[in-house]
Image (tube, protein in one colour):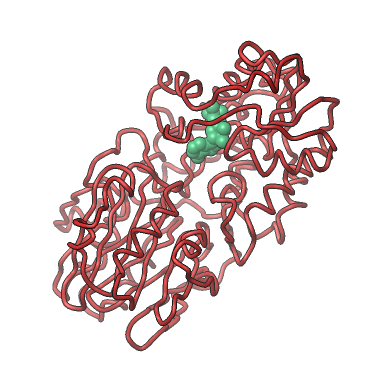
Length: 470
Ligand code: AMP
């Protein structure tokens, strides 16, 4: 096990949705999860309450395959939370699919978590010494144990006390028989938005989930806020001291859907297009076409094309029925996956000088395959790779699934070396300054994947190894 692996437990790069006060709570949650499917394809679950009892249905697979009328009928009530789980190596078990539910002295409680906790080992060991039996390998279960084991207090006090003991990224939805509770970590790392549909409140990772059900986006759950939603309406409690926010910039670059508004009403598509424009200003090259690596490269490619005046074309077609290649556990399968996922449009590319835009290079495998494909299958004369983010040099500990530092090609290779590896005619990454120019109020963002400046200090000994990254 290398040093980085020490920190890479189970990643919780997921989507959450919750609703209070709607007669068809589970049905709307299903729709919300459907809109958030891009945030996790490994498994999904919904927990509902009829005011007296919690009901839970979850399974491995895609939302549309798990939930049908029969399953939704088993989820009665006016409150519900749901979760889409992202797949990572070695964790594809039903036990890890959320929401997680537990029954304790005060009743039942369920949790759906987006984000990744850090420094969990000491907490987990303490709980295990005290007799806790963990049913999953998911960090989120720790929160349930902390709540259940609190000596006294109302559920909401116990919940606040529990989350004050954890560290890392957490956009959380919890529910009891009578309440929906939304919590965001003090840094506001992952997004979490509040919406309204008639008299019901909804909370979701991204606003694209609101659009599908006709809800209005009101505001974000504030960093450090616990928002209790019950029959009396909304009750906002600040449960953490204010710190400088550290929203995840990678949500803009890759993870969130372009039609979503995140981090206080900022449109993801607008940011991505602007990143493309900035990239064009920084890395101009003579060419005949600008093509995106679909889907994540599309808005940036449009921006690049607009700024450079070079025509935009769909030169690669994506098969939408294949999971994200990144999910595949083995190197060999991932290599194969790029071909399964993308195919060049030969007629558009033949003999052309092509600028291909992707949002990021992680290991470099995808770029290498794409350049080869554009040249050999597509017949492109020149292939110029442009990346709408800076070189990815630091693994994410807060919930974006990145490999270990050693596997991040840009952590150990110069840009010219990466270009050579990908066999592109030229390669240009967006600069950090360029990224900062585009992101409004950029100093309240975590950019650790690009600058190795991690906003949350690690307490455990292991993490002093992080210094290796500097
Ligand atoms: P790689 O082949 O490892 O360089 O992966 C680069 C590709 O993965 C790019 O096309 C990105 O759009 C995509 N990508 C970047 N980050 C992630 C992530 N966290 N999960 C899934 N795909 C990603």
